[in-house]
Length: 226
Picture 1: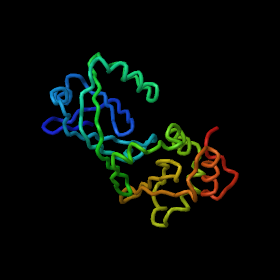
Picture 2: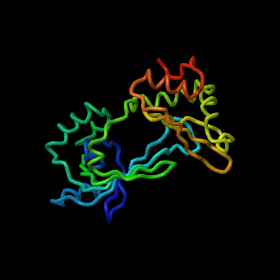
Picture 3: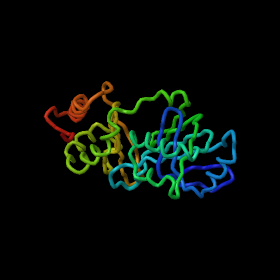
Picture 4: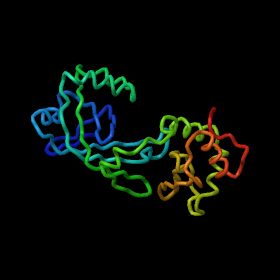
């Protein structure tokens, strides 16, 4: 959702991050478009991004990201060329709607706040621009779904490493990155998110598979799809 002071929040169908900028696709007739076009220097805005788990959880949201910055209009004659550039990195059918009821806006980010079940942290625009994507971002959702549907044994073995008070609920895989694996524990009194860290950050699928097997305590488990 895109929030601009004095207007209702605008639904966003595509978000593309490039360094310290976020390009968003919104309805052409929304108030945010009108205000951005009328403002020569841009206007303060906040973009909320919801990150949802790929599996059916009691609460699918696993993190929220708020990007704060200055919103600018994208010149109409540049929109299609920009959409082509975005599509090379972030293919999305919604980009085909540019010029047909949808338009692009550019948010120049000043700061970001990331909130998960374990806490929140702020990130400067400089750090955001310099951040590299996690090596597993393209496959994370597929792997989490695979673990949940086909490897309950692995999830069960990993769950033994959780704090004792968290082992009573239903343990589900939530997220995976180079630093570790996250779980959602659905208990009778509420949900808890917990991370099992790897001994060292991993950089490829072979290191990731070995780290998961080591955490599970079984060197022969193949927990990731080929």
